[in-house]
Length: 399
Image (cartoon, rainbow, N blue to C red; front, side, top):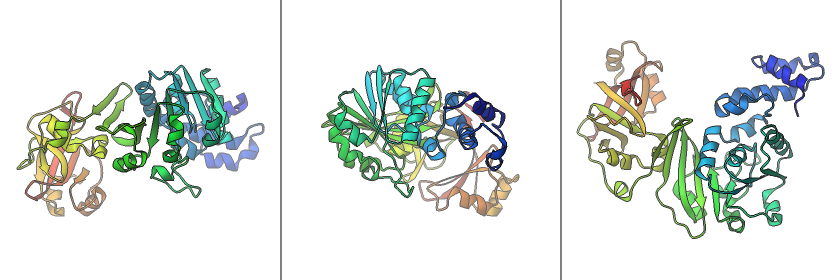
């Protein structure tokens, strides 16, 4: 798919202005400059998302939108390890094929189905380059392919397209392509379990209503950015507590699953901010489990609607960010100038009438530095600005 001359061109122009390369394409005979630019731009975007694959000169990247929709190496690896005991996996919405690639490293056999001929050829090429001979590739619409599929599986995986024909983002599962809600009964004829990847914007309760047979739910975040919702469906299942996972490194993840007691217990309210402030990671926040994690760690809550915990004791294994309170300030421009004389701070707003950007602009602060200005509401309704420093949880020292 990529000849040696094109690979040399990609390597030599890796840091160049791609717009200029396209304008000057007539200068480069024997090179498909448009394709080469697609690869250069794809590798730049994949450095953080797909680092191992971005470093492989033979790996081919698809157009920008398809790359954006692909799973990252970290999330794909999590899914593959989580379902490693499944011998056969059928991916009915293959795309670039990153999830199939990682499933193939754990499963005995993977069936990859993709209806876009260009993406199909790219994925097939990449599997050959990587030496993955346990992936069967089928080009076609999954709804048309499945009735003729003789293979059965332990797990069907689906990542429905979340954009319509006008490239508008769709959130509801029923609005995605394929309509996984309608397709689910057919998928249960192929495998006892169906794993569905959904938008992190989807309401979890809404998804449970739409699907109706959810055995497990996972909120999957990477470095405190919510990336995916995963719903494991099986016949007659009812949802239990959601698993919250925040991947913070290749071998490190914060995982939280609340107990029934933690879910039914209300944390105590703090009369004031104590020495440490605890900010649950985004996976916990998305699942609505902030209060449950406060109960587990014995933290007081700043206010019933403030999703921040506080304690005089340091819990370095808390799943989220930890801040040391070093002072307090009123939230007038004059008061902030006196307490942050350098005019530079990271602004965080929790249960506060303004966004962080709005407050930063009003206070005439520049972003960055070691100081955190946390604008929030205390138990008795007092609005306050807490001056904090972020703790390094590995060393229990301030960053």
